[in-house]
Image (tube, rainbow, N blue to C red; front, top):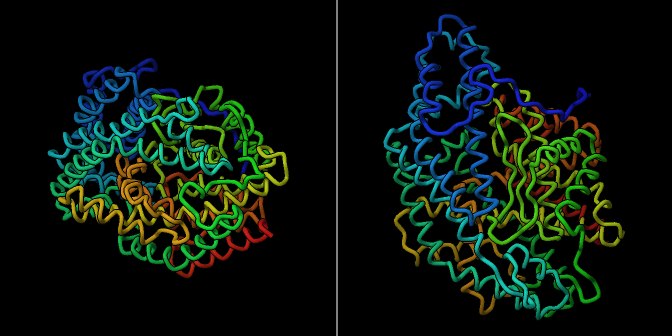
Length: 576
């Protein structure tokens, strides 16, 4: 059994930096880097103290820039917040990077490093060597430009609104109308949302072109033939290759798309329609109202705390600690960046959850998803070095996606009516399946984009449309809507802000389903495995982290089929 866990997280007492130290400019932090660079290392004890001091500096810097990012996304209309973030990226970060490389080399070149505990430091040292291999002085200004450019997506998208029934809504808020039984209203809102996106189509295309150009240059400077190959190394994808991604795409077509067709035909029959249109996919029949699990962000948080408490009190305590520390911004509003995230805060330990809740079923999923990430932050905060807490994204998304499935056991907290609860679970499990084709589409598109970095808008649109249709449900009728299909990639912020971070969702969804299979057999053992794996942070390899969670690190066709069959049976039990 796992030891008793506590969410009474405390910011560690600083030993290297003054307790009241705040980053103002490069000169304020330069002396600490100089100390680390010049400090003599004579014994292993010296080296380990040096690592702890460097970790403290990294944590302070990481938390500072994270807060700049959080505040900017919470209010994209405040120019000062944008300037604060841009100042860090353009004036401070470029001066940090050469020192970071210098310190990495000092560590790897030190004869004392071979005396460090190999098991404890293996993944960290592997990552440091990777950073040394990739570092190029000429890439520093380009990376700074990219950090600032990428944030323009949130600024552009945060201004997008539509008017429905004489009221202005963000696009996230407007999506709730797509669940409405009134088909004419659904179509009207759907078209308004898509038309609003089209108004900024060229601006976003130009932004994406600028991002691609700079990313390709970074890769070429580092000796790679394309940004995809560079990014696989930078992201530490030590345990799978681009060929594995291609096999994943093929397996989704073979084993997942047939289930998506079954789901969409079920939706069509449920609605009594001759043809299923894009604005029908999330809809309810005329005699059913859309699910209404909460009305305010405060209510969503309160219910999620109760839901988590039923699983394990520790999970709920994590959220309550965050609430005391004002670590939530949950409701959608004009001027707020789109999407949702859990932002780890390296020094204080309790993360920040940002989302755009509008009272929908989807928001419940987002909340428990980000809550899973938050639990991961708490479980790994005890680790000695900041670098040990930098876990692979493929296990980070297991933390969040498994929590979506675990939490379903207690969803009566959101849905008092048994029929609403049944509908909510069906919707969730349908989404578990239908998300795979979109993941494969976005990932395959990125492979094409960066293999062909000099493409023009027309080629981009043509190849997006080709790939999108490879993974599209034939049950949905897109007649007359080609212009929307060809532009729909622009809604995916990952393409602009975190390139190539998307296949992780597919790999992790398989892991989450595997965790849920365990949970259905032995709840307590599955939760023990979950907390044990997450508490390891990034101190083990990805296959070892999966093993600690009681999972296979496997996304072969046969394994995907096995998991899809399991989910299909669970859906059948709810539908029949």
